[in-house]
Image (cartoon, rainbow over the protein chains, first blue to last red):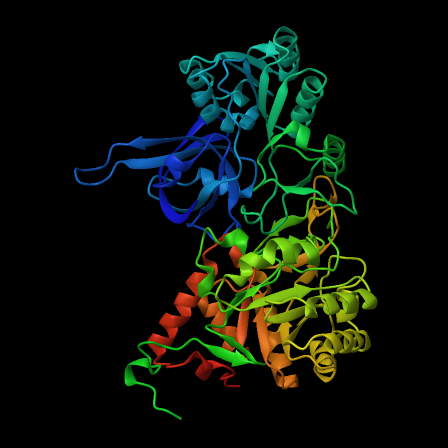
Length: 285
Length: 316
């Protein structure tokens, strides 16, 4: 884990309101595991005050600017412009200073048994699945089911296809791929491969639907959650979710930042999570 | 008294940041504010904990506490609201799982604690007095986010006096009492706490606030209200620390929105013997180390041999 100030290598719009930012990150890039995240803050303004968590899309190395300098390790994040913080981020350019802490959290546990692997991504929830796919394709057949509201919310399909991942696109309005929720594709696939390993990231209602589909079958499900958090290291206790067996007398809270963001679905109390969705109107945006 | 070798004498080149008060000897005046630093271990990958003036734990109760529903935090301009609800592992788990790590760190350990009733405050103090490896305790009578306990005892001078006397009767270590800003006149509470036997006052805890989600027309926190912390709070905190320093003879630890060494110096000059850093730890895990380094630099630049020379030097 590293905590440092760094610079942006590039910040490009990849679809309306979706951006892809490369940040120089010596030390972080080689440590990062699929599903981990970084805490990010721009140094160009005082706002927002707190760093924000962003899933790592991918890591890599660029050649150095001149002989004698080391190659440039980078991490890449993908973000959707939804509020004040991300509106500030979209204005950042190559060379702007940022603060970075990471890699943080517990990522996906990887299968290497040759079994069926199904990734389910909703909108920007696609982010942590790319590094996962990079690893899984080495030993397994990987399918990606990707959903979004509309054509512009479906990202990076070509990148996944280049890895040899079989991709299935669905949109709510039918502007790209199949019309309807990504979960109807999942249901079909699981009928065919009931013992698949499923990995999901996306808005809470999507994750719940995925859980409901996987639960009665033999499919093992790992989900990557999103939460408000101040610190990212397990100190503020702002991002907790309730684990199985939680009660007022025997609290069993899990920090999304530290015990997650990736959880086995069986370790979470989904009834309480659903309640949270209803009460908070929790939305991915 | 034997002469110190010349090279070891504090001078403006190698300023001495150590402070002493109420029997506590701190290598520098910087420590975390309770609840922003977990139980210490959470931050050990990011900094050398030995460099801190002290470590202050998350607030403990006798038994584990679940805390409030989520969302528990919301950012506001220049600060944040939190309503964690004092979620903690309880004292038994603290002794078994958290304290062994803290004992290995070469800095004093200050345990923050609270109860839900007067009786529970007493039981908690009794349990604490039996635990080895604690250098001081900080009595929380100021949490704004729980229905019972906490702030009820911090806003009424009689209740404050009662709980401090009770805790004092069990605790023979330095007793720090943390005060809330959610009162009309903080000096009234400060005097009551002093008379009841406190050794040190820390102030301020968070200021109760509220933020509204305008589309859903609901509070942004599940608890409705929460405690405001961060730089937005600092001028208020400096004012209250100054007032308390004037009102009592006890040493004061200044808390509230400290993000930099300059911020910390405002509190020291206003009369605080030490400072606690809170929200800044969330923003940057190395915040306290940067503040300690910054204090060192300031003393060098100003030709100050010991930071003690700055405490309470405000010219009014």
